Image 1 (cartoon, helix red, strand yellow):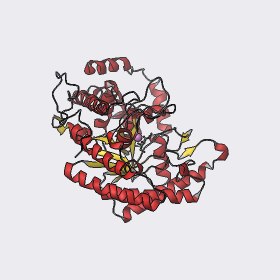
Image 2: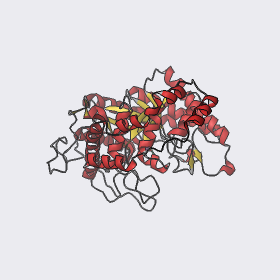
Image 3: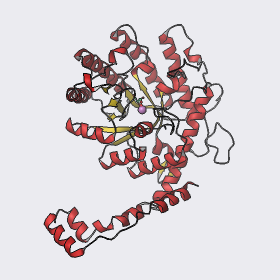
Image 4: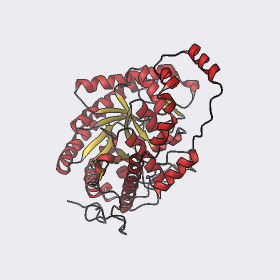
Length: 438
Ligand code: XUL
Ligand code: CO
């Protein structure tokens, strides 16, 4: 069997914080228990197929820079087979238990949809065998409804019902494939489900169509007994000027309107959160507060660039707060941390993929350890509990229990007078966070 990553001859091992080996984990020890659960189970790391194996470093101004041995073959299907082999070699050497892909990442598109589906069937059969041989599972499957020219004006929100039907046909197949591979979930990211200009857009109708489309997907999943979790992945813009699934809050309103709120959860991406003007922590906490937290696409943007740079997460402050919010949300069930990130255009060597993933996994492992300590010590929750203590008794309790209205509150206030000012202690809390981080 061909070896595609000879620079890494054996699986990446945990060597502890003193190790100087760049291809070893210094913090991620999969079997180590943190708050009663192994690190592997806390984080459920997944490698994404599209960036890691299919993006070759091309950008708006330049062609691919990365040469990969698995791309050398005389037919697209052979390239797909080799890429799959390389991917499972990579997953195994890295020690992740999950992967994620779009239909078009794994199998080449052909002249007709029937032929494309044949290619997909061929590849997923090989993938199923590799999953069985390695114990690696599919975190979620998804469908690319944004790259082909037919989707230039959207998929289910396209003005043409023929494109809606085409997209439905593709999602039908992607659901079947995800079920065949025992995928734990299925993601909808509405790449072009939005608009470029309202001058040519019937927004109400497009939203109705998106609602109809997702309901059809749910109906079909029931029919084929696909039991995986459905996710929506919010993103406010890019490539479109406005995307309908803008952030977790707008997705939740949409899901409620189309009676899908009990079925879908959120797949929250760090760089999408920042594009929406939020932090990932905000998105996780909003989702958790509404019972729709599902999974995370782990990456980061660049403070100075206003687009989805999809960089590997290396900021300890961010990974700590992400893990803190995930622990607070009760942890992952079907979801995980999927590295929806790509190495930079100048990182041309295959080994750079290992450096990126090893560093990000270690950064999350450190974040988890710090977040667990914050939880154990109730570093913030003690303060929050006390800050809201007024609601546990007296007038606060009466308000929460619905026992008083405006008249009773007016009588109470006129008697009590001006409320006391209480410090929010933000600076103190930020200092405490830094004490734990260092
Ligand atoms: C695009 C993005 C996608 C989804 C899956 O910004 O995040 O790769 O994660 O379609
Ligand atoms: Co993503």
